[in-house]
Image 1: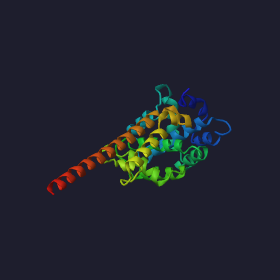
Image 2: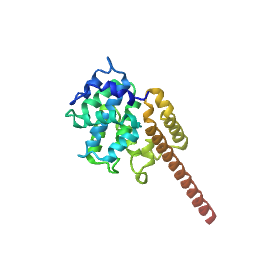
Image 3: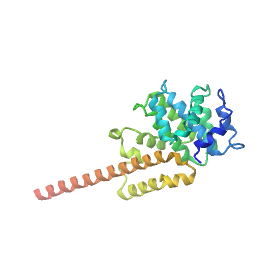
Length: 242
């Protein structure tokens, strides 16, 4: 059963703003995946509201990114709306998720990836949204370097720096670059992530992440070939002139 399908019973008694109670009691009463789902929905609601208004695009982005089936939209919407109206700040949800999944940082990284998708749904990453994403990343224990890579992947493709996407320096050699690229592909393969506990509902995010990594590597590799060809041509002109 999908994690969304389990929301109905887990949140049946929710009213007002006690969403944190589901997270807080997860170790004793609810499976971790339920707490994960509720935490993601709550943070998604806070993210959608960060720029001052929750747009239809942001709500639709949430439904798409987290693969919410039509039959579960009502359950998800209920939690989403409660969290949106909840006076509790994002901090409580972020910290509870960070504690629950302390040994699974990859899962927390994918929560952040999903929040980036929601934030950029209206095609603008607002200052308040970026600030909130930065603060959530810190509470998740995500380093500035890793946060920079995630942010770079979600920049418009025309403005995306391939070196930032891969988290490498332009001075990195070909062999080292290829090794780093292969490591990223293995670490972020959808099957590998699901084995670590990342729900199957995150498959869209995992697929898009791999696509961004592949695109960045291809761009760097092509640039290096182009530079090598330019150098070779310049060398031939130089030696020919002699």
